[in-house]
Image 1 (tube, rainbow, N blue to C red):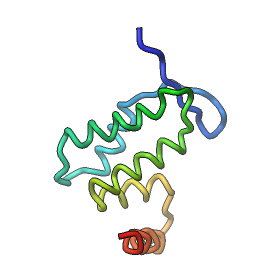
Image 2 (spheres, helix red, strand yellow):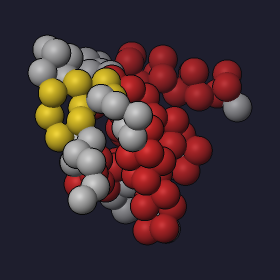
Image 3 (cartoon, rainbow, N blue to C red):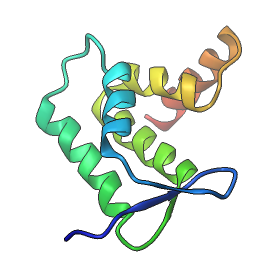
Image 4 (cartoon, one colour):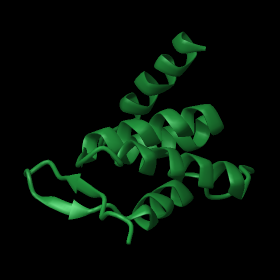
Length: 104
């Protein structure tokens, strides 16, 4: 039987790691984008592998997903970032886009 991977939430509680939750968020970010299902699976697998050594912080999962999406599709990256980083207005999008341009 495989070990149950755990996620430490911001409030300190532990919950089982559910790859499907990541797939749902990544899927929403990638809606109408042309990214292969294999690339999506690889992203999710890499996040799951990071949880193998013990509880993984939920914030770390978000950072790993952002990094993976940034490499796959910058539009999906910004979509996911807008939710993960809790954008409140258009200026937040502009700041994130400026960071993408600086890094590229």
